[in-house]
Length: 112
Image 1 (cartoon, rainbow, N blue to C red):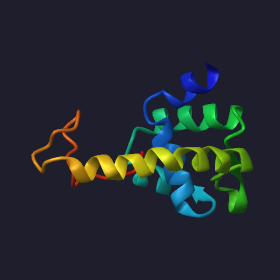
Image 2 (cartoon, one colour; image 1 turned 135 degrees about the horizontal axis):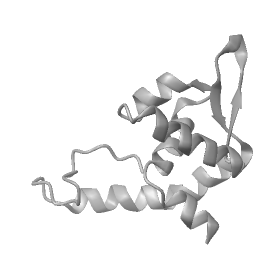
Image 3 (cartoon, rainbow, N blue to C red; image 1 turned 45 degrees about the horizontal axis):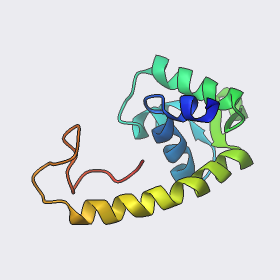
């Protein structure tokens, strides 16, 4: 259940997804921007939890931390792919009038 506790926390999967989409190490501020400007305290907390779980790691080039997925984090993204495939099929079946919880209809961002 520890994995579900971690991955079920608000913003955790979004952080993992954005680290994956970055294609390599990404700075904190850029990651925060990609996560729609989530608060720095929440992002710091999620990154710390992901680091402690072995899913993310930070490098320190030029004095600024850069975050990346670890090999274990890459395995997590691979495990998320069936859910992403399902979500695309689900979104294609929805009417355009905002039926998803939280007001994210068909045209919404499809990242997990």
